[in-house]
Amino acid sequence: MPAKSGRREKHRKLLKVKLKIKKKAKESSGVTRLVRKYWVQRYNLFSRFDEGIELDEEGWYSVTPESIAVRHAKRVEDGLVVDCFTGCGGNAIQFAAMGNHVIAIDIDPFKVALAYNNAVVYGVEDYIEFIVGDFFQLAPSLKGDVVFLSPPWGGPSYIQSQKFTLDMLKPKDGWSLFQAAQSITPNIIMFLPRNVDINQVAELSWLSSPPLDVEIEENYVGENAKAITAYFGDATN
Image (spheres, rainbow, N blue to C red):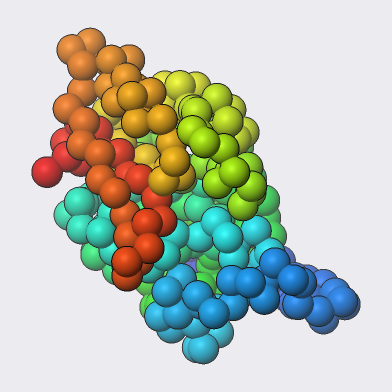
């Protein structure tokens, strides 16, 4: 009972933040050109979009398309997943929908409130622990079976690079991100731009001794290439 009570209190706090967000949204000047560009893809992002899904502008271009998030989630069964940069919650929702418990972290309380709202739409909010915080500060105290890394790619302009290198990731380079994740578990799923330097990604496995197993997968929505997913350790098939 105390654990449930604690979750309810955290959910109340998130709902208070959410109410502030709604007020802020009403005061905004309307839909931006960038959001209009991605609007046509809304059901690829969330199949239940019309049931109350909420996104900020960054969420429109950074959330993992639902079909890809489902593929990620199928790699974990009845585990504890640490979603280090949860954003609007697309991946956390699908991990939870598979019966996993998820620790969903984001440094932005605005995004955490959106993620909570979206988890409620999918009915999985009780499987997710939402934390507002800095992943790098939290990592030493976290435990989990799998770490999911979908760090910011630097906005839509990433595609203009002929080859996306790991030092272009935010808020720190890919090697620093991976090492922080390894402090939790060697079983890591990393979601990256489709133009990422594959050789650099494969070399991340050598940060462990012995080197981790690694599997690299191209992700498509329909016939359109969207991203690359790298699976490490026991997250590989």
